Length: 138
Image 1 (spheres, one colour):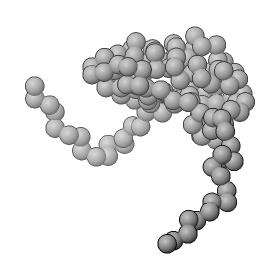
Image 2: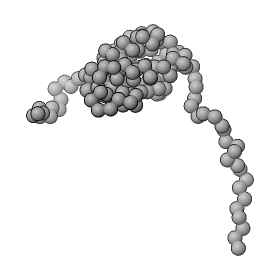
Image 3: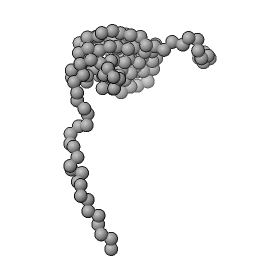
């Protein structure tokens, strides 16, 4: 008959509570990626580590409603609410993409009370690189 193996360490000794690291972030970068189908808002610190993010899909919008300005506004509000609680006061905004949610997300960010140092459009533009796909026939 095999002897039972005694466990010396217990799992109760591990740290308890939430694993989320709450640190004060005075300055950050807000990335808005606005495509035709969705809008993703990501808030990072100045080194690029993600603090909070939200998208129109995670806010409960489905289908064609994800690409609307109201969905982008809701996503931006959700992403920023978390970082305002962590003490963010100043931020840069980088907007990428051709979607309808660009202006609505920027308006929501301005309303949040965070001071914006600058707003930059970082949409990738080809120097006539790849051949585009054939036009859709509907």
